[in-house]
Image 1 (cartoon, rainbow over the protein chains, first blue to last red):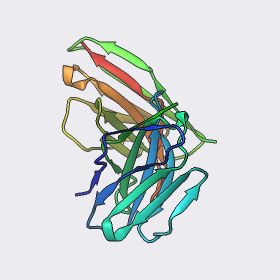
Image 2: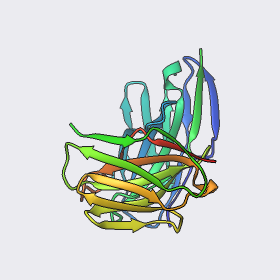
Image 3: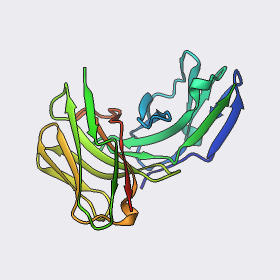
Image 4: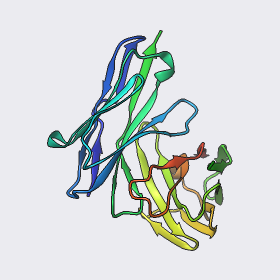
Length: 115
Length: 114
């Protein structure tokens, strides 16, 4: 069975600080996909990024960056120079290549960015 | 572009009453469809998924059922609600056959069973 662990339940930072959200996953499959989603106070989950298990290249998109390390089964998410609008619940998720797109989610990390 | 509609946004129902939540997708054909539930302070639990009309797979035994009467319509139902059915219900779709296709979520329905 697959498992996704987001050990940080809540994080609070002051605007302009950098913050890293941790994600550790477990699976025996060799082909899988990792995702990050953002859930703002409005409730709708928004897809941020996907990584497949064969691509360990880190990615940067504006203030967001993702660090995927298969050796430690981690897929961490860093927000640089955080802003109040980054306040949300962030979910890490894992999907196998063989399971019709079903995703296993972590419990989420609530990020609060204070002005 | 693809859009997903889910309604109602909020619902308060007494214990023992029936439930019907509806979700429709526009702008894509033969999507995979999903119902997730999010309990307060927790992650998302997959309840049902469907890869085609009339094809429903249940992930956890429960008081709920799902149906897919049309290609882009997904319905979550219950004959008699329990207090434990309260939660935030999210419908989602992904590309059929698309390995690693991300999920695209609706706005969710907040259900309170009293």
